[in-house]
Image (cartoon, rainbow, N blue to C red; front, side, top):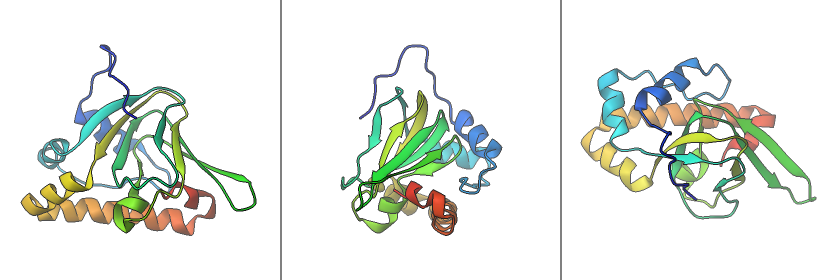
Length: 163
């Protein structure tokens, strides 16, 4: 799943912070954290690069990892019961994986890099550690993800992006 990082790809939490701040889509991840709080969150996240076409999430898998997109675009798709492919595009400053992260259910769609991307991930174990050490910060992240989930569910074309 994770591509080795090319030598010229550098990660800094400020790139993710800026992507979130500049995302004005309806399903953006809206987190108003201080720089100190972002530094704390960064210590619980793992950055990695995706090459165009690389699969991030496979429909039906049991993984519950949450992904925050810093740059690039992700396509979210699945084949419905009539064989039709449904598609949504997720851009920088948003999240994918929130559906399984909260529900403990299998992934509902496949997520693939539509372009080269920088992604930050948080496993449920790391989130539990964050919640035990910084409960207010974990609550803020949970509320932000809950907002993403709710906005996607009321926006029929974006429902597929709930993974």
